[in-house]
Length: 559
Image 1: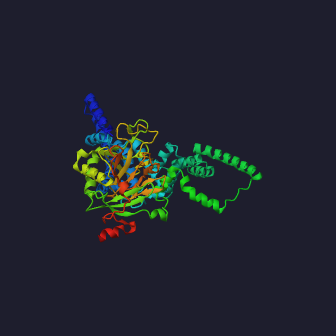
Image 2: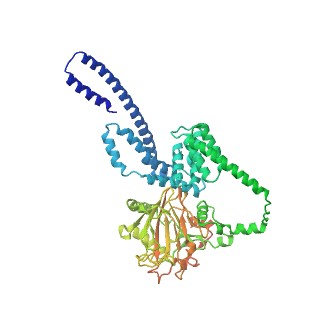
Image 3: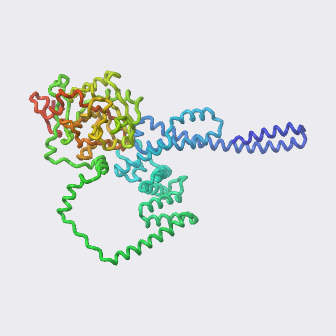
């Protein structure tokens, strides 16, 4: 873009050498005229470039204005989160290349400095995989995600052909042909509907046909390959693929004809009794991953009326604890085996905001305890950010720890620090145990406080869609409710682990999930009277009145 300045320098050199105002000078006039023309071309190019930069700035200014009004809500939409990663990782790099040709040193310097904080290629891939994970867990079709029609969204965002193509390519790089097909098909659909794009149909069809072929559907692969050839008759790979597919399909047809000549054995008919037995056992036989996904979608098993009748809502003071005699807390049973209870309105909005304020500067990728070494490390099945808050950092943390102790009757001095976790879009924690198993003797050796006897979990936000805590082995699902906390024991009275407490945090589909938890250990509990010893006692003081959960709130307001 600065070639015209170089030309000007060359002419200055020539003038010095010639040293004559005669014909050569006239020539220079014409040369100058040519330079002016070139200068105007340069100005037009710069104006065109600036128009493109201005278009970018206006677009991003408008988007940022909306996004910054409600950052968590905006980023609670998985498409917005993905597109933010894509913009910062890919599109800003294109803008940088565009602006580098100018002398805007201030912008370039600032961009270069800020770029160190930009997401990497790995981050963009991670955001894409989060979308694919949500798609599978919640059984969403590509069009639903692409059009942004997710439950409860505030900031609807649509995906472009380029976005869909990018997702398909990431799946393809992972040898995930199932998702490659879904997203290349969506990209093709949007192109067929007339959306303008730098991605052409030939490129999309090439990926799509190959992904379908890899899944064993040769007829469909042939159909899309022929369509590709209609658009680009000279596409060499497509020509070869058509011949190969047709040969293989003919071979397959002949093999089927040969097979049909043989008399197949008639399959035995399945009786209604057998079908009924199979249905009853179906949930227990489902693989854990499928159970987990079913529960995340709210497709868990329902309790029988007999089991449901054993679940109560009550006012609870933990055996007349002085803190709760006059103001007992609201407690409800969530599940019977394992026994999971929920405390309602147990943490205030002020406390929640204080915890988040303390935790935000320290949030780091969440870790798990290595079952062999006991050392904390990151894991692909736990996707969240967490921070640890100690009691001496703020009086409010000490107050919250004391509240847990008063209500559970368990010693907090040997418990782990309060862990705060934030699950953004796609954030999850796949099925796991909180306690150390027999084959993990060193799981909590460094702490020296024994095994994790119980788990206390605060929900510090509501979640628009997704984000349940599920127990795949028993079919239980507990949904986030801001201000509440759930509690369960991980160990039996014998000290043996309760394997039915295996649980998971479902991926957040829309919204932002904030939780904080307290892992309570064995040491120090030897002489404690625990909440589990008292929770079913029918006390006569009037405050521990058991109610049907349906009438719980009516009773509360009547009081």
